[in-house]
Length: 484
Image 1 (cartoon, one colour):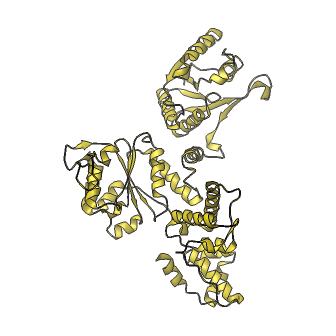
Image 2 (image 1 turned 135 degrees about the vertical axis):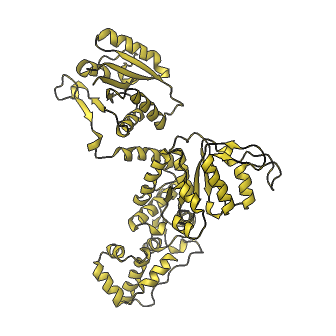
Image 3 (image 1 turned 180 degrees about the vertical axis):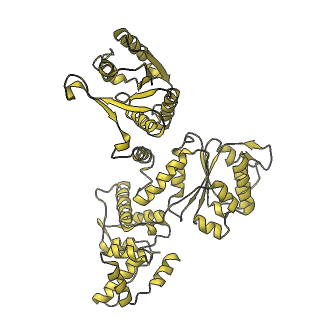
């Protein structure tokens, strides 16, 4: 099989500081010691075409066996986009699919290297990632060592590297990626790449459904197109219909101008419908029909065909939505994809502690405190056992209370908002009564799950079962309370 070399022109490495060809640079060193290819496809950005031509002319004059094909590439914007670079890389490699492709990895920016990693990992092509190090750092100290980068044996999976890049840059002010929540976002990233698929996003109030919807939009090829939202529970149903399909001035109070409607305005992008499950079967059927043919049928005016990804938010699980007949079964089966965000109360204790500590640190920065406020043991225990009906939203509000009203650098239960009732201490302080109360408290945290409770308490499961029986703990009542 014929071999081809592919790389980006490295202006900082392939040229000296005074603008001359760097004949000691990585690309020239590769030519000297390892080049055995039919030709070299050299990618250059449009602003470096002249340098690319200069490099090609000098190299082909010096090496008789090297033929360089320049491929100028248009890069949008000042900050290069990983998805755009991935697209460029895929296009180039697919054009060369009949060759053994050696990707020279030592030149180009860091984000270009990530793109090379990604296409090498995902495309089913005969590719290798090659890298050399400087001769003075090599084993022989005379010629550079050549490395073949093997992703299959890497300690860090490529997908983890790419996901970390996307999340940390766009969402570090919104997300706390514990183990459980990261699993949801890992799935969301895969769904985001399927840009034509619709999705249900479910989770209790305050779990971050809108944040997840934004993440899916920004992680897809739709990211530069509109992202719009509509809270279906915030308006009368007729007004929801107008806002979706378009309306004329005066159609309802507040309609002071004509509107194309959110479906048309979201063309090419994403529309998130919060509390979708409150809509009537009639309006859900309109959405179902739109998913099928892509046409918007306005109340007044001509039909329009648009391309919109719909993300449908609901505060109940898919199972409950279907059981309670809050969504049309045919609509769910048409969508077929759903992600569920966990409530705070459902997270393992270690993840809940991580979230509490992280929120404390973020509020410290927000309120410009030199040190994070120290939480007393009783307050930490309260956080670990509290149900948080409004989840992350409520946790953030509670910490606002703490940072606003704390007079010292410590906080205890008296700084909780007034609406929260504190569980009273046992009237008896005997060891048995205190132990019983603590076991009940941990059982509530884990919704009556004995195995998880035993691990949290640091006792054997049989020991816990015996204590439940000895203390006459009503485990069924605890489970009913947790599910209420």
